[in-house]
Image (cartoon, rainbow, N blue to C red; front, side, top):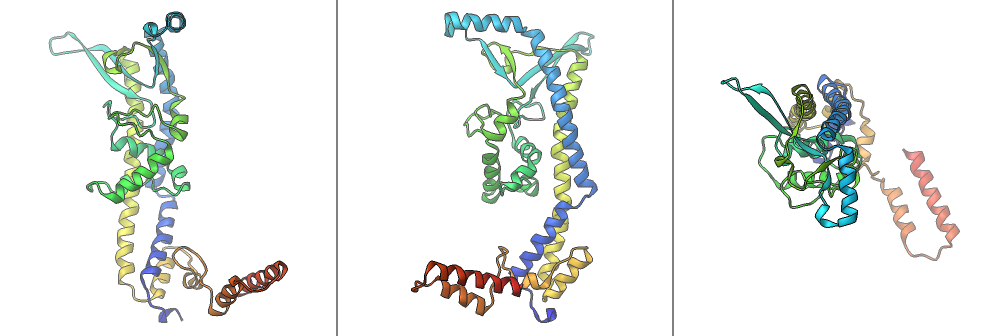
Length: 328
């Protein structure tokens, strides 16, 4: 029977989507490396922020913050100089230049979900890549494609890519602020919940770049280690998705060459994937049952405006559903 069923676009899509789904769920080295990188970052995120908060409070003691807030209540706007922030310039002066003089080493560290992981103040596509990879499962449950940036790596911007990036950002609650940096302070939902755990009180209304906060070299290196761990989430996710896409590229080539459904069934079997030919034949691309003529006719008849009581309609529907259950 199967040898007589010709392959078509719909069948090819069914095979592709089912096999691709299996590729994504396989416990490969690339997948495990990504999951481990994400777990490592999770551990470092909290401990590193705890350290960052200690460093910030050395420069801006809690008592001073409380005093200034008291003054703000008393004198209003002129004393409004305390703010919460999640990104900081940390600096140390324990290195020396060629002349043996101490020099300042500083960089920007952003603990927000969309914070950059290369020291730049401004958000980038890598920042979005991290956010999407970090909340990959949550985004897939919402019908989004959190792998789009990795899948489109090296390609020019295009409507397909933009559409899916925007869907992911919206699902995460990223702010639509026109500010060019990582300003997701106005974010909602997942973004806000994530960011709310990583704020510290600072004194001063200027941008963070103008208030480098002193730390030791050892502390600075811990911040660098944390930022590298964040970057590794992106790089391991990219490597994993690259491995899947390479397999999928070959899958597309093979499916395009197949003429009969049986060849797709054999391919799936060789890959260790059990596919039921009858299920492939009787379902369309959305997974809905294609009813045989008799059942479909009965369903359509039941939809017509005939003089039936409510009980008759319920009975007819139950009979129809019983036929479907018996058939399949």
